[in-house]
Amino acid sequence: MKITYLGTAAAEGWPALFCRCEYCMKAMKAGGRNIRTRSQAMLNDDLLFDFPSDSFHHMQQNRLDFSAVTAVLITHSHLDHFAPDDLHLRNSAYYAHNLTSDHLEFYGNERVIERMQTACRLRPEEPNADGLTIHLAKAYEPFQTGKYTVHPLRAFHALEENALNYAVSDGEKTILYLHDTGLLYDDVYEYLGANHIRADLVSYDCTYVALPSGGGHLGLDSCPVVRKRLEEAGVSDGKTISVINHFSHNGKLIHDELVPVAEELGFLTSYDGMVIEF
Image (cartoon, rainbow, N blue to C red; front, side, top):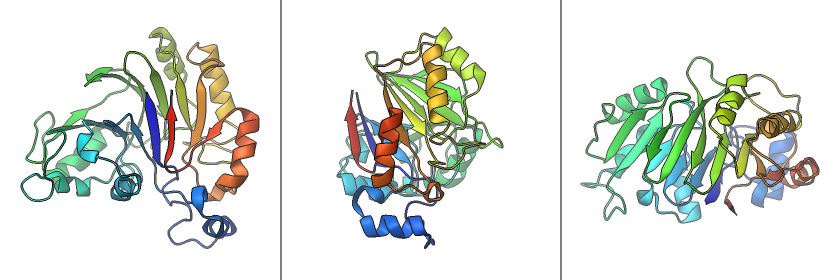
């Protein structure tokens, strides 16, 4: 299994769109891995986590074949995770020719479904002219998409909607994708343990970075807390790869500064374009 981190920032990006704070200016000057776009990741070459407004840039920057993607798992409807307007450009009659896959399945909560219906004139479970089909995903109701078994999990985030995290397995390896969320609900640990889900890689929300965390996001102070709970539930162990991701410029530490701090805590630090095979 392979994960490619396409975008690793929170909603504002880093440097943030209109910001000239110390940490944005520091990242701008340092360049390289300190420059972060909005959150998105690709599993192998055929499954995406989220579809933000930076998807077009991610495709070009990483020279990816997005027409080969057959499934997109949307965590929630916030702009930095879901911007459906570009999906019209998948129409093979006008914009997209010689597609690798003729269909693309989207999975998300009720709010995601509503936005897809508005933007793309879609009905759930019915494909449209762009080859898109949308499916309602509910926490703790697993489903199969292609070779993947997907377990939607309740996220502590965007409490006005049913935000989701995902555990995804291809039958050999399993990834636990925890974006966006604060401290996990007890029933998440219970579900993962009861279903004998063992993660080979866990991707942790770390939006707060060096600030005290709280609410619907994690930080360096709370990621180890979640990791310990996952280990106690038998979901992860010392062989599990732990990666932090989804960083806000308010968190102070640019990538170059964050890497040694995270390493001391036993975490890898994601950056735009990072590839991990496991």
